[in-house]
Image (cartoon, rainbow, N blue to C red; front, side, top):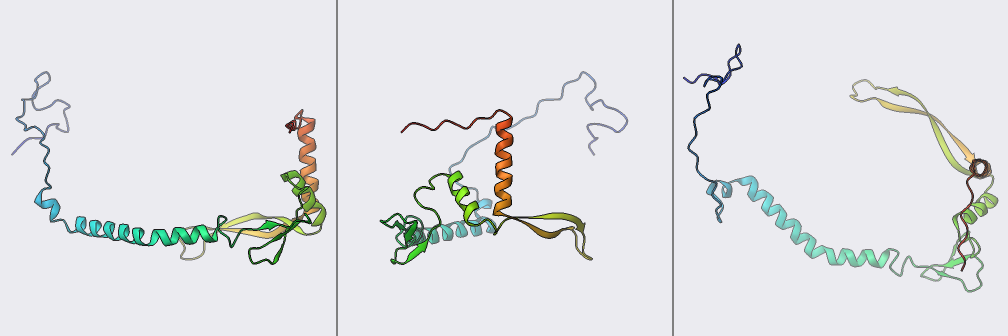
Length: 184
């Protein structure tokens, strides 16, 4: 029976305080080109290999059609592409030739101009909604609590415009200046 290296009442090894441990005979690490039989007999390895091949095959067969379908129906494709009307009236055409309402004209070419136009056109409509956190509620039999929120409080476009204007004025009062426009 072998004795433990460290006993519960002593911190010394079984070889003594200054006594070195005897050298062990060891074999060097050997690299082999073939897999051991016990690795090839592992059913989990076979299942993962077959699944990997099946996914590769499915990807190889389905990827070109899926890629082609994505490119033909996305922003690169004809179905989603729109062309501006020649009169510049702020209307765009779908691929099938029908008109699609687009609220901005060529003069609203920056985000602040688009926001200003939206604030003017949709002043009374709902813009942003917020809900106040009320409490955490744990239903019977549930492991985790659920968050309970109050009713949605909406701000109209006019109220958001007022908030945006106040925020911008505050930044100007703090000394922030608008960035200069680049010369064309």
